Length: 141
Image 1 (tube, rainbow, N blue to C red):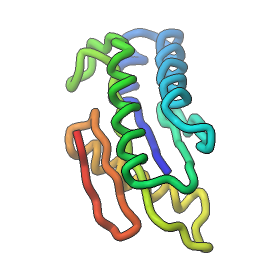
Image 2: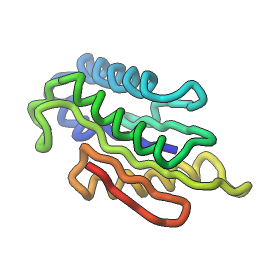
Image 3: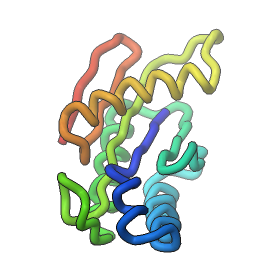
Image 4: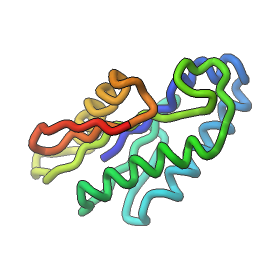
């Protein structure tokens, strides 16, 4: 599972307005759809967050998808003058990868990915952090 947050989206929305904010959300959603395989489900999850739920994927695949989303959002070159970390819109990603028990539900998977998102934000944003089923975290920028 992944949770993706647009970095400093409130500042973007305040500066460019809600119409441009909606266009930004649509562009990021398009990147997510293009990067993810057809066996994944992606959805908007609140204001400027998105979730992706996938089954039967490798840790390597999770890293590749997270990197591709970050790179493809950057390649959109959506100007973001009020962002303290980039001249363009960027995203932070938390991901959970591991064997899922019968006790897991959607909320618990998102909560685990959310721990990675907080770590990615602590590490400066515009990066990802994968939390593994063995509680082994790794952040990559």
